[in-house]
Image 1 (cartoon, rainbow, N blue to C red):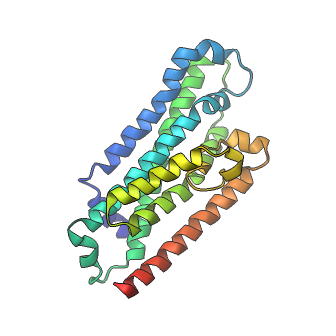
Image 2 (cartoon, rainbow, N blue to C red; image 1 turned 135 degrees about the vertical axis):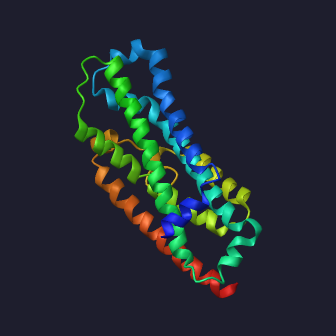
Length: 239
């Protein structure tokens, strides 16, 4: 029920079209890259999907993060507009359920984005690498990994957006996190939200860190969810 209500709230905000457009925009990068550098890429040895992700995923992941930031801000902007949040506080509605409904929607839409991006990467591999053999298991593992390591960023951004009545404040915080964490070496803060989405499964497996990334990102997501529940209880006491 909560999920249905949250979906209706977003119906006229342009949330879904914006995310899909962002997914297609991110998916354009490997196509353009291969059109320009196909001769250099096709002579390299290795799995074509891994080669394409190594060359393009940093920019694709950044777009995914920025779109998730904008989506979180958009979700809570509709709640705070015209004192909507204050009005709901007197209704028999659990704000925690509302928050997790938003998180589920954000996760589902993000998953669609990643699936689109992976489909384009597979298409590029089949077009430019004639010897590429499609492996569904490999693609599913890669897609799942990229979604899971994005979850702490999505959850934390929703926590930030829920705490800020002004959308521009939460948007600014998110953008600051993105560009601050991007200037540090990957091995220093790679497990932190806003930095973990840049990781690639093939590289993580080479360093024997894939399980570590999945475990830590799962724990971070749960911790941020618990922190939001506690924050909502405290806010209700002081309102």
